[in-house]
Structure formats: C-alpha cells, structure tokens
Image (tube, rainbow, N blue to C red; front, side, top):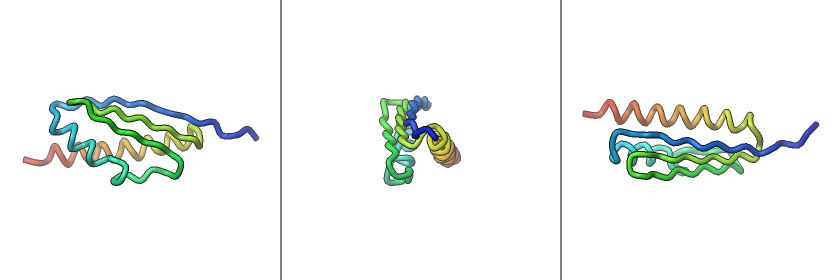
Length: 85
C-alpha cells in the first residue's frame, strides 16, 4: 500500500460586483465552512474575484470530496444572494 500523497487545488471565481464577491467570501470563510482536520482552505477576495486555495494532505479523494462540499456551499451562497431584492 502506498502512502497518501497530498493534493491541492486553486479556483478563481468571478462575480458581477465587489458586494457579491464579498458576501460569497463571508459565507465560506473558514469559521463558516468546516474543513476536515489537516486541510487548509484560504479564500482571498480581489475586487470582484475570489481566489480559493485548498491544500489537502490526505490525497486526491479527500480533495475531491472537499471541493464538492465547498462548491455546494458557494452555490448556495450565490443562490441566496441572487434571490435578495
């Protein structure tokens, strides 16, 4: 059996305005999104963009699960924001 090899991913998300980008960033900041132990998730906002970096020491499988969860949270935040008047 081979040891786990760490994996990482970078995402850049584009939003129509800074207010939306800020609201989505707040919704997924680390104290709102519980990452698995040992995982590092950094979210930085640059005007209308969010840069997300995920470092997963447990390997690709765990990274894929985390990406799926995080993308679900991002989608929920976007839908909520878009439903506001």
